[in-house]
Image 1 (cartoon, helix red, strand yellow):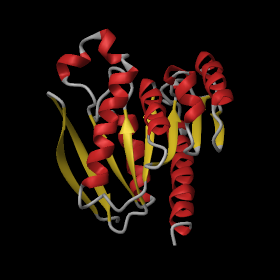
Image 2 (cartoon, one colour):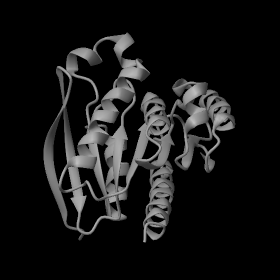
Image 3 (tube, one colour):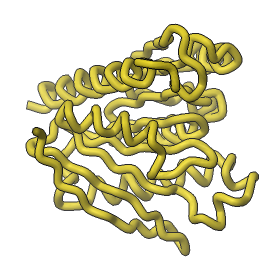
Length: 221
């Protein structure tokens, strides 16, 4: 069984404190920072499932609450992509400075509105972000300007039965000028609750991150 080191962490973001769980396998090949969707948290069972699959593929994971409990009660704050991206950036800064994670290549995994925040951060921090994965995301909410600036290889994973979100992902996909892929999980709805759907999405994410973490490492030598 894979040995995992777990650590509760607190990251300061202005007056707010973000609480999260950092989990590291031995000899990780990279680090994945999660951005949750509106109304979700670091305890999201779906994102925790994906994170577990990434750790099995020898990647570290950080799941954290980008909003305080009070902020998460405010509808406008939950959909404030600028604020979510700013908070995600604070977490990325922390990972790039923390002794345990600072030497690792960094990827972003976003679900729902978290995907938009991840893509905005990738657009702003091209030198720091190695790859991005969106699951059931709203990458269109990142905005045209940000999407056109993204340079990190980006995979958009969408459920085949999530018709409205498929269309929105195709809109965002057309604006990306990086290495990109849109992957449809047949029969899956927005939450990937169908048997095997979330596993398939997690395996796609692990393969995408793994390939790009290893590619970046080989080109650093």
